[in-house]
Length: 228
Image 1 (cartoon, rainbow, N blue to C red):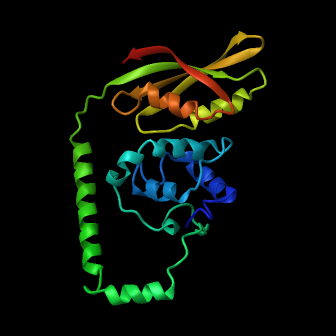
Image 2: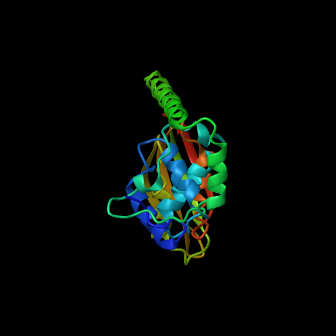
Image 3: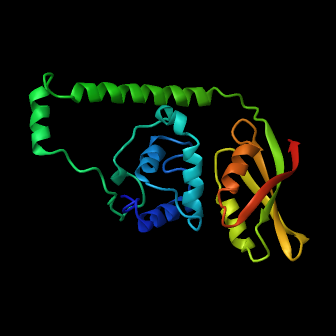
């Protein structure tokens, strides 16, 4: 398993294909799996890799709280599609002299006990997180939103623009119908509806992720907002 070299275009292309039908690296919420892959990428994916770019911008918004995300961070080779090996470059190993110094300073023997304790604490936090989600009330507040997404000009590929918008996937977001509405001078805007869970998805994060496709999108406006 793996994505190849995530610091290269080929590795990011594998990641983009992997995320075409997924919101996250593992499961249905951001986790340490997303943090591990995000930290291995040296720069944001290009706009033509819309699935990878959507995921990158979404995980970037969790940077201040990434240490508290659930799960246990694993080696990159344990994520991604089968049949692709991890080849992401890593820092050079320490010199032999440094290793010798570390051996001299190893006053407490093996770190196995410390690793087991850290793993136990992470499992406890994951269990607490799952229990907290299970206690959420059954009644979920939702809203119906109609968005106007405007291109740069009449030469913008509106089919690709809509594909990029629909590639944005997150827990609590369901895309609906869409149509192209004339604006003037041969330019058309994309008008697309969606239903969101209020406590999970807001118009601010939708605007942030949609306008991240800056090669296609000039701006986004909320045309209608109704509570369900």
